[in-house]
Image (tube, rainbow, N blue to C red; front, side, top):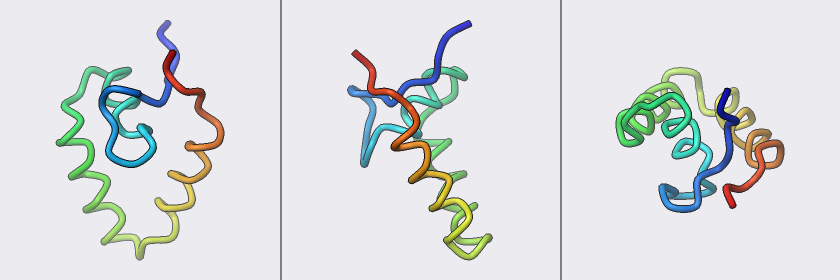
Length: 62
């Protein structure tokens, strides 16, 4: 099973969404759009905190 890692080539901020998109074979822009819609609909903090935790938990792609 392939590990989830922060992407070095497909990143806008920290590479978390790019890494998730590569792992699950999803278009990164579509996943970013879903993330933005989720952030707006949940009031910013829940998804922002999850994103920040993933920045520190997920290793960088080599």
